Image (cartoon, rainbow, N blue to C red; front, side):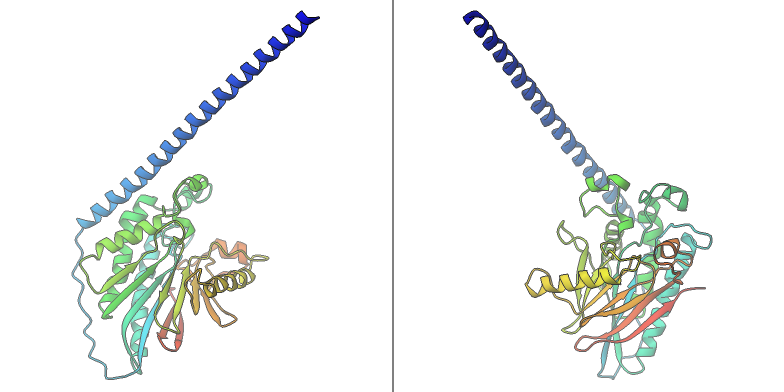
Length: 356
């Protein structure tokens, strides 16, 4: 009997030893796999950084025409206003029955020209020397945002970020610089700029093609002292910025893909988010704001949420399957342009139509 107990004990010890050895092997394997994953993530980050640096270095070698300073006469009007155009959802490279890169380029240029004409109208009663552009994301269409997208674009993400995007947006900002003494840009990212398709969770939140394009433009205009780019960085606040133009003109700028609506209409989602962000601002956890501007839904809308005025920008597309499917509407190509008095807020707003 004692011999049987002794044998059972030895057997249990052997089993325990084997289990312990198996657990140790599993832990060692898990540690090795985690290290490999970390190395792959670092490699991805290095590749993204290398692509961006290469593109930015390439931009430095490009030659663009000199930008002429404004020739407008000095205004004697005491009333000063700031021109504040919103630009978003160009979806550069998207291809539909009546939209592509060439159409986008013509409409972005047309938008800049119409902004100048609106400023001339406002100058009849005020001095308008400064233009503050609120760029709200999805300037690029991307390449792997959803399955099959590569069949619905007319150029690669590489061309969107390093060739067509810089050329189109350089023309846009150059036209503004020729007609305003000062241009300032607040630039936030959109969801179409995210890299990696379904695997984009593996990337740093800062890694976004919209941000890369913004940084390239910042480099392109490095020698022009009359333009300044504000591009938020960091993991925590990479998705928004506040354009503080005065006590009554603080614009909360974000793309809008984090707004969830009911029955395809995002108004409830905007109400919930804006009130939440205002509560955080009241407790010193976010920068306070008086207005909010966003894009994403491709259908121009403005609304009040308590005392906060919100503008949801349109798109430069003429045929928009997203708005048709999700909102049962079809916005025409358009963008908002506002005029602001720092101590009074928005004094005029225009919905600029961009059909040719």
